Length: 497
Ligand SMILES: Cc1cc2nc3c(=O)[nH]c(=O)nc-3n(C[C@H](O)[C@H](O)[C@H](O)COP(=O)(O)OP(=O)(O)OC[C@H]3O[C@@H](n4cnc5c(N)ncnc54)[C@H](O)[C@@H]3O)c2cc1C
Image (tube, rainbow, N blue to C red; front, side):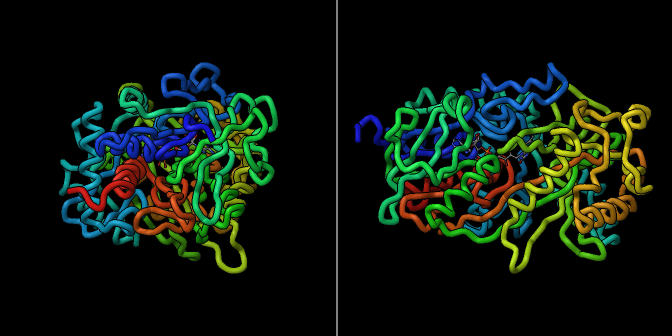
């Protein structure tokens, strides 16, 4: 083993959880011999061609929307979910509070928010001004059996998020942390239940050969294509993009997991004027219902006023839908996800595979693209044709979406949940169930399986840690970032005020 390849800490991935861990290691004076490894590119080199070409070109070897410095955060809408002082729980962003408690999580969110502000986030908070109006909407929702969660939001905007993470990239680099880009971590090195390092491979070689060769076949970096890096502290921060890889690693190395949920649904697009009150008073309304007859949890998520529906490519070329909004560039539509939580019971224990199959079928129907359908057509039991879409009053903002029939691929239970939820929401927001509103699919959030970690975020393998969205602890920018800060503290301090 060369000393050059030996590090004090290795972090896999460079999404917000990893970046904020690196930031905090610098504050703790522990930046020496820290290595960050990312399969994608530097943030300034991440360009999504869809802006120019109008359609997704499936960038090889990795989608620029989901991979590279700042991970899924770079092209995200950049809505940082905070909390209400008087809330006695944390309602948005994941489960960090289950490990460190609600009060500590609030302190950590404050600290992390300060870092975002220091690097250029907007000082304005959304959702704090119109308390009376929000209370009225909440009461109306409760009557329909729907909960409304409103918390303050700091909105970066997609273009500003890119800029902000660029400054963090410079900061980390100038503080002597080593960053390796376009490098895939293919495998973990584990001996006697203790992590020893990682096996890497250049993304360029992956592009020219078979991508994502099964990690089971890789034993060491004896061939020139692979290189090993060693550390007795390895942090997995691979996000949802790495959920599949992580699941393979857990199977291969017996890393303990518990079955998680998979959220399957659609991106819903409707005119700003219908969503005016929600957009003005809250910017993002998080509604949660349990519609009849299945009573599954159905929620709205990632609302983007005057925003744009987008597509992103995951492992094995799966195209999923998402949405974002810019600070300056505006459309006339609001988009939001409507997601149904799928919590499978015995004997089925493969939520990721289930979600992938739904996505695969929908992608096939759209020739590899996202499929879009009018709500009115679904209710009438027919597909949407391109000519109909062209005359539709709601103009789709995702130009590459193919008009079709999403009900061919989304299961009866999921589809019923979504349609029933839309009907109930229409009683709260008039026009929410207008026939011209658009449903895009598939929108799927792969969180599972959850990696089992202790209060220090350590897995059952000594020295191997898991943070952020990938292992299922978090589901959003703020919480993922905060989990990174806490990770650094867990490694080197018992407690920091
Ligand atoms: C379009 C879009 C909009 C969003 N909008 C919002 C929003 O407004 N608000 C919000 O709170 N959240 C939003 N999110 C979610 C948010 O971006 C994520 O919750 C957050 O980025 C998770 O951070 P992370 O560090 O856990 O993982 P990620 O950001 O996913 O980063 C993981 C990184 O690890 C890398 N990686 C994976 N596997 C490997 C490997 N084997 N080797 C090397 N590198 C690897 C990936 O390339 C990736 O760059 C959005 C996401 C998207 C895609």
